Image (cartoon, rainbow, N blue to C red):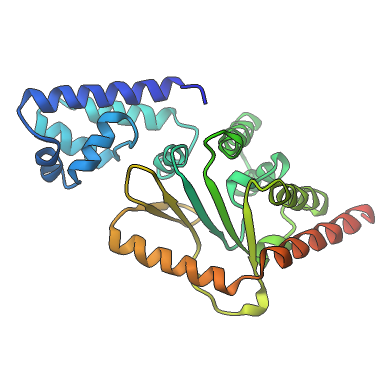
Length: 277
């Protein structure tokens, strides 16, 4: 994947951080301790692998007495991002993840959405938005999905709740196309999908979507999201609890074969509905 201008700016951020840290004689561990992250995270910042959140950048400025250069850089990059501020780091992390495990209770995960499905979701949440805004959201989400076809693509495990499969987002024709797309991804082995049937009743992670990400050179993370905000979690104890919740979801779900059959059946139902309207 070619580097963009943002990637190059983050590399510059890391190089500058290393230079300023070494100029005051602090090790990565010592700086990390003063800004409440691990020394390993400082190393990841300096390599441009991990992007610091705004509050961490502000504390780095205070410790290194940089006059706010790191805060200004982070704010500039977040403002240029096509994603919501709370999702910006998640979008960066998924590029280097070796495994992504996601639970979707109501909406198809962004990495699997079709153009018309993205459009329908975006317009529903922003009914007065200009077309330029809608198209930007559509394009940025479709661009994210390219990681599934990269040579270094992550393993992508998805648990869908049946509500996600049967809710006609965008209408029957759009939904039929979306489910056909998911079935295609499964058949091409880009993703492994299972479905929690509505008959299963109560299940783990009933409060919303859950995403787990694993990496080759940094600790795993968990991400949860509501309609208006998201939280990236990296505390080991919290991530472990999230992983257990995901394991419980998987044992509640149908088998991969039964899940694919359900998805294909729902797609056919939507197709018949679309042809009669």
